[in-house]
Each structure stands twice: as structure tokens, then as C-alpha cells.
Amino acid sequence: MRHALLVLTVLCGLAAAGAAMAGDPFRISGIAIDAYGKTATEARERALSAGIVRAAYQLLDRLALPEDRLALDPPLEITPEMAKGLVANIEISNEKRSATRYLARLDVNFDADLVRAFLRAHHLPFVETQSSPVLVVALWHGGAADPAAPADNPFARAFAVRGVQDDLVPVVVARDVDAQAMRRLDSLALEALARRTGISDIVVASAEPEGPDAVQVEAHRVHVGAQGVEAIANIGPFEGFAPLGARPSVALRAALGDAARKLADALQTRWKREAMVRGGERQSVRLSVLYDSLAQWQRLRDALGGVSIVEEARLDAFARDGALLTLTFTGTEEQLARLLAQKGVILDNEAIGLTARLQ
Image (cartoon, rainbow, N blue to C red; front, side):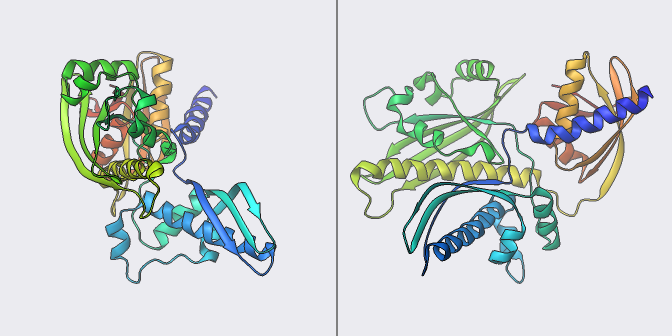
């Protein structure tokens, strides 16, 4: 009976861990809808239908790579009926209407299982696992004000208003930083920032104006680990632009928002290329999970449950300092190791076989 209870505990924990991510990749928020019709009801139906289709395409952009979508023959086109068939529920706010017009803000929650089945039926590879958060140090060179102070930093505010908690790479904006040290990529300052925030992947992004309605962004990504600060890549450069004809009072804000979106999108694309499973085979392995306390076991269990390629984890044995699982997943061990590393877990081959432990 005790063993049966442990099996139930680990499987329930793995099922619940998927909901413990930073956000929900199957939720698309902030769709502005606006439509006309012969009646108010017709205008509302048209607006909602078009908004759900837009949300479905945004979901495809989030989960799949553009080159994979372009490679489909024929191209994947989502009809209103197809999009509605993938929806779990919708949330409507800021409604305005007249006799012939309807405007609102639409948040769409898609059914994860239906979306997975839809993408597999169309042979479109996808990623649904969120990476660990990335800390963005947003530096602004647009004036004499302190670029590290959020109140004086429109670039930091551009990230803060994006609502990226549902992205595959959640972005956290750094506050109270030494701007000069960040510009130099000072190792001691970066290590201190990582310790203070608990985030080891850091992007230092520096923006400056390029005329009245454009900005230029240079970005450097580093990883702070046990061996110190390791440079990962230069990202960009990026250019952000305001819409044509934008008023001077909103042009800068729009250009910085465009640049922030492009930087965030580049992080998503990089993560998708790293985590993408292409035609991987389903396999089962024996995994020894090593820990020193119940709290560590729970963290390891939750990490395994938060990896989308893990289909099943059967508990075969349990002790005070370790558990033996039969882990079933799709893809390669290298992909599994990469996804677990994002959650602070080291997957390694040791004398006793495949092991998992906290970093």
C-alpha cells in the first residue's frame, strides 16, 4: 500500500507541476478587436471570430518556428471554425459598442490537448515547455537622467508592459542596477545581480535613439554559473520603429516597444531551436533521482513534471536519499538534459546509470 501511495504521489505531482510554470503558453492575451455589422450582434460576432483567428496564428508563432510553417505544403491556413474548435474559453474586457460597431479586448485560452493534436495532425514541430526566466538589464542612452532608474528609463518600461509571462522565455526586468558596470559587462556586478535575483541567464540590452521615431539596440547574453560569467551570444542589433505618422509624444514609446518585442522574439526563437523535438522516438530509461531532503525531492519531481517531452514517470523505489523512476519521454537524452538544466536539474550518466540531481 505504501508503494502505491508513493506512485500516486509522484504522478499527481508531475501532473500538477505543468501548472506551476511562470505562465501559460496556451494563453494569448490583449487582442484588440474591432468590427462593423448590420446589427450590434453581427458586429460582435465578426469581431470575436476575427480575434480568435488572430490569437490562433499568434499561438502558432509562439510554439512553432517560422521556417517550419513556411515549409508546409500546402501552407497552414486557420479558418474561423478551426480556431474556435481549439478554444477552451475566452475573456472579454473594455467593451464598447454602437448599433453597428463592436470594440473590445480579447484574451483567449486555448485547449492544450486540442492544440497539440492539431499541430501533430499537420506535422508541425512545436515547443510548449517554458525556459527558465531571462533577466533583462534594459539600459537607455536617451538623456541625462540615470538610465538605471525605472522612472527615467522608457526602455525598461517597454519590457514591463509587454506581459511576457506566457512567452516560452519569460522575461524579468532588472531594477536597481549599476548602469555603468552593466555596460562594461562587469563580472562582479553580474554575479552579484544573479545572486540577488536568483536568475543566472542575463541579457544586457542597451538602446539609444536613431532619429525622432527609431531606436537601435545592442544586446549581450551571459550565463552566471559556478565557473563565473560565461558569454553566450551577442543578440541583434535590433531596430525599433514607431508607426508612420505617430505623434512625437508616442513615437519613442512605440519604437522602444517594437525593439523590446523583437528582442523577446529572438529569445523565443533561440529557445525553440534548442528545445525542438523533430521526429524523436519514444523511449524509456531508468533514472535515479538523488536528493538530501524531502524539499529537494519535491523540487526534482516538479522539474520533471514541467518538461513537455516527459510522458510518464513511474516510481519503482523510494528512499530517504533517492528514488528510482522509469522515465518515458520523446526525443533524445541530450534534449531531456537541456530542458532539465533550464529548471536547475543536472542529468548525468554515472556508475549507477542515469541520474538527476539539483544543480
